[in-house]
Image (tube, rainbow, N blue to C red; front, top):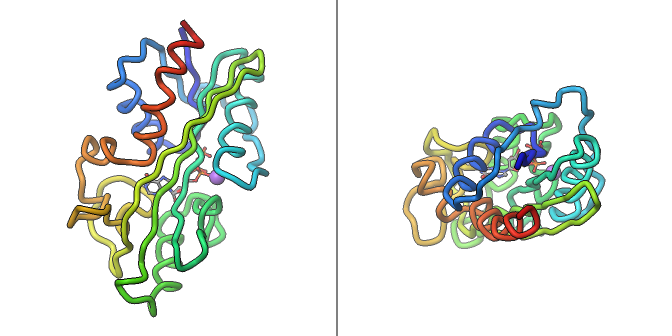
Length: 199
Ligand code: ITT
Ligand code: NA
């Protein structure tokens, strides 16, 4: 059974392949880049779950295949949850990780260590061509460093230090990150639902 990953973020595809493979889900995963003719959906939702469902439904309808999507971001307590669903384009250009991270650090420059709580959030959505849908959410709580550290991962990984660790997410191995991440939690929760609905 083929399952389409409704994302054009190559880092997410890499992580999702590893996370879903570890669950033992017996599916043939295909990235959305296998369907370049299908236009990207506008993320008009106001929550991670709404946006994940929009992406999954659009690709399921366009391909006639079951689709899973990820909508995710960094939520900073002292900023009232921002960047949140705007994480990928916080500095203006979609997917400019370096600019997004630099702007966020500048916005937090006066915030001391006791007020730098934040979490990564992920909504994992499944949509079937018949309209069936499911969503599971995950989070990774931590604190934000003043200076980036590490070269792994993507996005805001170099500044998020998970609770209980002394390293940033960018200093974890891919397996260590997937074991505790928002994306790992969400998709490990979705996997048995995918297995059941596709079974
Ligand atoms: P798709 O919509 O095609 O999946 P995207 O990159 O636009 O790709 P999102 O709208 O969900 O995806 O935005 C996700 C952003 O949140 C991403 O660009 C990062 O800035 C941040 N983010 C999400 N997960 C992250 C992680 O595991 N580590 C670091 N940053 C992350
Ligand atoms: Na988004």
